[in-house]
Image 1 (cartoon, rainbow, N blue to C red):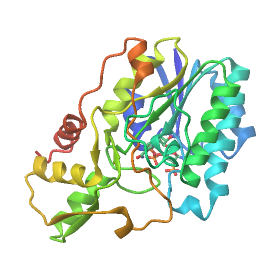
Image 2: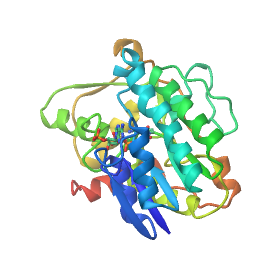
Image 3: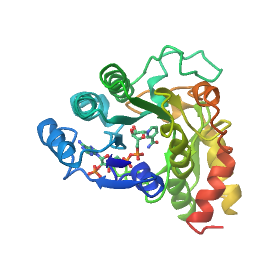
Length: 286
Ligand SMILES: NC(=O)c1ccc[n+]([C@@H]2O[C@H](COP(=O)([O-])OP(=O)(O)OC[C@H]3O[C@@H](n4cnc5c(N)ncnc54)[C@H](OP(=O)(O)O)[C@@H]3O)[C@@H](O)[C@H]2O)c1
């Protein structure tokens, strides 16, 4: 089995490449750019992969509000070009999406299923949702995998860090922290998500999946757990989102239910607390 991995230098790409069982061709943006459809197709025609894994994305959630074209160029039109190339090569497309396809409904407080109608509250979420639909509509052999709040080694390429690292850095500087307590989701260790992807894509049960660590927390509760596990006691205060305004609106509740993974008999993922402990162990804090 031959895999081409686009966006292989990102957090998820770096975690996934070593786990893929077969011949893995990691591709960085200079080799396979979603904004250059002709070159992208020709690179894939040369490699002739059985599976194309798309770990690339435009991830600048706030900036996307003022430059939605840039987000759509990668997350929507780029995914369309990739899906067309995969279909013409009869390759399977593995594509990643986000809990931010939800958020327009501000009243929901039960986990979102794959079968629930999405409704993004941001330009980023809308660009990712459009990409999902292109992948699902164009490429018959597709796995579209929504995940949430990823943190992994060296952080996101686009954002240059991750929430855990930011919390530890600010606490290390002795500064007080104020963290939102009214946005609830499931922060997920990228190593756990990558490991969970492997058995999914080994099946031929194509479709849409939700894969995150289990359980849920607010970002304040996540920060509290980070400090508890790291043995730190900074000044940490819960605040409402209105006290931390951002250009893009985030979902108040975007916990994802994993009905599809359960239906095909895939093992449950460990809790977000255990995922965090593993991340901290790997980065040798504990
Ligand atoms: N991070 C999260 O919290 C989160 C949450 C939910 C879902 N997701 C989804 O999970 C997936 C992986 O995210 P991640 O956190 O691993 O992102 P990441 O660390 O920011 O990595 C994204 C990668 O995409 C590459 N890229 C950007 N534009 C590209 C283009 N036009 N052509 C080819 N490559 C391009 C980047 O390369 P450069 O370094 O050259 O820019 C980077 O290596 C994405 O689909 C994302 O939407 C992420």
